[in-house]
Length: 101
Image 1 (cartoon, rainbow, N blue to C red):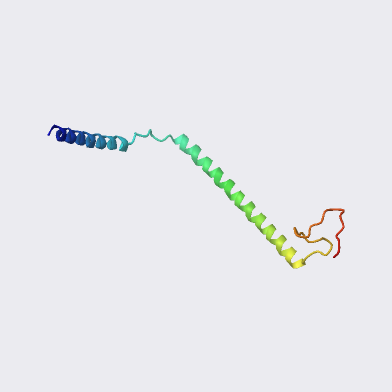
Image 2 (tube, rainbow, N blue to C red; image 1 turned 30 degrees about the vertical axis):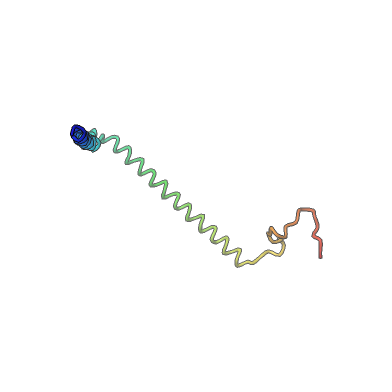
């Protein structure tokens, strides 16, 4: 009987500690009032980041257009007979002659 009473007391105390701990964890600290000067600095920093991002996007579009034009021009011109094809399988060292079989 004493063991059952101790078990119930431990259970009740454990539940109370758990509920109290959850309330303590759930409390939010009061935030200080917003500083208008700080908000203005954050806003100006975000505006400068936005303008820099727009500039980077414009540069990216320009480079993509250049690469597309370069690839399209190379495809229209066809392979250059003056330059040997880049191939790993048939690569020969400079100054070494190919042996014909």
